[in-house]
Each structure stands twice: as structure tokens, then as C-alpha cells.
Length: 282
Picture (cartoon, rainbow, N blue to C red):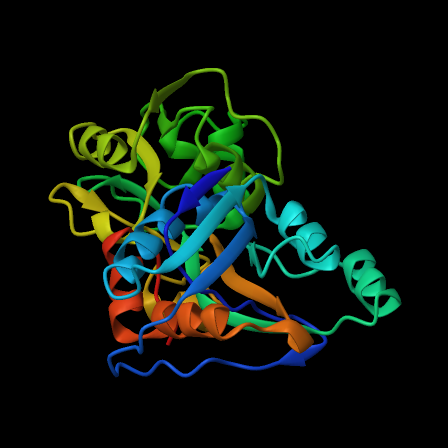
């Protein structure tokens, strides 16, 4: 468990109660107390620590504990009164909703942005559109030559994240029906490495965060005619995306949690999401 000196979060709701913290930009009042956040690795690995650090600059007296062991642990913590905020990269499940009802607990949900990755190819590659089935078949190895998806007669080089990264599994779930990657892949420890490699390889294909789409030598083919953009993600059209939410117990929302959520949804918090390759909410 990571301990951060201060923070305040508010969570999201997918089926029970919908509420939102305003994205105000007024300077926050000084706050004291403790905030416990549990849940999603997608949020907790890099994004939450950065948000917490920035929040602490104006709220140094808030103690924040962050535990990132998966979305399910966040909901379990909220249901057992073990945390103030459940960070989630999926909606609450039916079983979790039923447990909440048994516990006479009502969720509030706050959308904070989107985790999204864009499929990219070399700018010289003539392929400009792919279907979801084609993307799946390329990364699983069922399709190994560009000519089979409308490109040149050349082998496809797969450039992906390393197996220890959350994106390695995340893309497999989003784009590959959770099927295993092809055996012939080259792995990278970050998106920037993939972007650089694809830009230098006319037959390469990979996936990167949206902030790297302007990398020279890259292009992002549309998926079923949908280009990767903040608009297509927020309208739930681009397929390789997940909504990021913060859930709270409606009856036990602390002022600290609400203040932290307001910060995350503010222009400053949303800019941090964009800087880290996430897609802000619109």
C-alpha cells in the first residue's frame, strides 16, 4: 500500500445513482483528514500518484493512502467500509450492485476521463482503415501479411508493450477478445518506444497513447471508419477505450473525497490526464 500525504476523491456510479462533482477551478480551501483510495491498476499505477502529488501542493495536510490491486478490490473496499473511493476502469458488476443493495449502500459515480490506446502504423503504410476483426487477427498472429488486410505484400511486425505492463493485458482485452498475442512480437517498456519503432518500420504496427499520435512517421488507421480522437472516445465510438470512474458511498462521502474529485474533474486535473496520455472527459 502506497501512502500519500493528502488527497480527496469521489467515485463514480454506473447503474444506481448518477451524480457529478463540478469541475470548478476556484482555489480550494485548506482541508485536513485522511483519504483512502483502492482499486484500478489503470488509475493507480501512474495517474493517481500524479494527481495526488498535484493535489497535495494545495492540500498538504490531507493524508492519502492508495492501493492499486484491481477494480474489484476497490468495490470490495467500498462495500466493507475499507476505503473512501473505489477507482474503477469498468462499471460495477451486477454481483457488486446486489451486494451493495444487501448492505443498504448506494453508489455515487464520477467520471474522470478515459483510458484509450490507438492502433498505429508507419505513415508510409497504405492501410488507412481496419476492422476490429482484422486488428484482433493481426495481433494474435492469424494474419501475418499486410496484403491480407489491403496493404502491400510484406510481413507484419508486431510492436507491443511488455507483459508486466497493464496495457499488455488491457489491449488484449479491448482488442483481441482476450486471446494471446502472436509469438513473434517485439516488446517495449513504454508507449514512446513503440511510437519510435513503428515510425522507423514501414511494416510495423503497434498501439500508443493519444498524446503520441502526432509523432512524425506515425499514422493511426481508423477502426471501422472511426478515427481515434477525444470526441470519438467520449462518444463511445472508438473501440479501444475504457471509461475511468471514481465510486463513493453516497451516504458517507467525506468533504475530502468530494474536494479531491472536484480537483480531478477541474481543468487542472483534466490537463494532467491529457499530459499522461489519457483522454479527458468532455
